[in-house]
Length: 344
Image (spheres, rainbow, N blue to C red):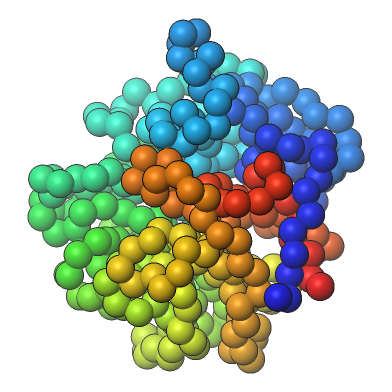
């Protein structure tokens, strides 16, 4: 395989949440820490409170997985605060205190690294829940300028199940919204005016079902999140929305990452009908659209339904030029969850 993982001993048990030059953010259970580098001292940022009797049990990783108790989004703000989503809790951590968003009517998750940050620093996110009754689904905007949370779009009841993620294309200065899960609920949408108007890139079947998306100047790329049909990495031309299948992959993609013009797509070991094996796999695509399967780790033996599918996922943020950091969950490896990804 083209890549291998190396555990960094001092971060055993930690998760890489945000990475950029001089600004590293890590989580350890419900706590956040900052460091200027991978070797600098860790500084405590704050935590999302947990009841004492629960916090004892949440020390155990399997229980945390069962209860979905982890950070999903951590975004440093220009005010010095941090936007966080932790399980189904959303709010800010400022001066080591957690401030929940009280404007939100019902609890939901924002999927990992699926909150977009635009050029002005506004943060956009959508509701992700089981939504079996197909009630209306909202998109929110948090403005750093006035510290306000606002509903900026609402999908009609029955139109979609939930929002997989919202992503900002820095090239076209537009926002993309990925929706699922069944039939016409599968959509990729774009907007240049914060969802006042919306264009549908495509939708209608599982070939348009995606959880994350990566951008280049001319194209955007996504790995399908299909449960019942074969999955592919797909390139979409921004000018006419024409699509090209880059290559077939061994399962659904949740997370993707761009580093030094190499696109990484992480296949999740979901063990769904479309998946022929029990491996979480990592694929790369270069700027010439050459695809390679570069890493496999097998799913652990705990239930996908209760203890999460097996997956690779990446920290948010711009990243750093000389290193790729990666997290794992529910995979068989050497008793760690945070690694440096190395090209062999």
